[in-house]
Image (tube, rainbow, N blue to C red; front, side, top):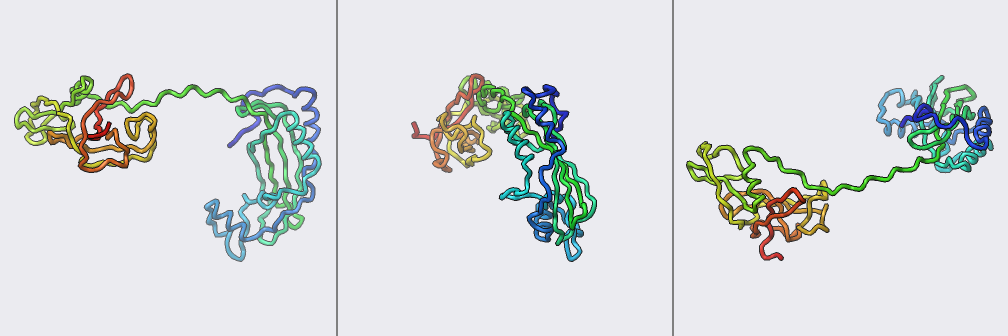
Length: 325
């Protein structure tokens, strides 16, 4: 994440009760003096870094290996046990910010300059200075002060690089209330000139199957022509509603709250069965199997058509397991 002092409005040009005057007084004070790296530069840390970063450059392996330049800060970090070489100025500055309500912190950016390569065995020392504390700034995260520190990293007393690090100490902005969640609705079916008659039938609680006008073959789903003889002539017959489960799958993921494991609304979002139903008329259609737990659906199970009111605009044909209430 990159967040600079230019983000958001400039905010107030100073803090109440002269706070900014106190904060600005920390500029130029030492945050750490003659700090000592907890470990010398070493090959295991270089290897772990390269594996984590996916960096396979040959310069970081073998007897003449050097450390990746971007590891500069790693050799000065305190780890879980923290630093013991922080100055009182550093602690005082952060206590002052915390006391003024700027209790949250986020790293915003860093700049590094590399002057010489670091090699295994190099002993690391460093000095850190509080370079600046900004005036009060307002960002999307909240209002606070940017604190910039500069660390000079040395190997064997020779300057190896400089690490400038900037954070924002801020009071979080009040969160906007989330809008009320809209009811989750099932996806709308695609209705076109070829299948509009089917959905008109569903609206009238009739399951209509196409019948070829020439060879009388029944077909489903609806198509503009007969797959057997190619005729474009057709009419419809109303299915009795009786059928059996020819095949089925159980949907576990992704979870979609508008679908249910049964016709019980409390089951929304759980696994549900999608069946390939063979109608008594001999055609097959895909629909939900309801009225029975998803793990009780079986091939050959008898089912009966009913119509499910999914929402105020949509009704769907589904199949209830026979013998279920």
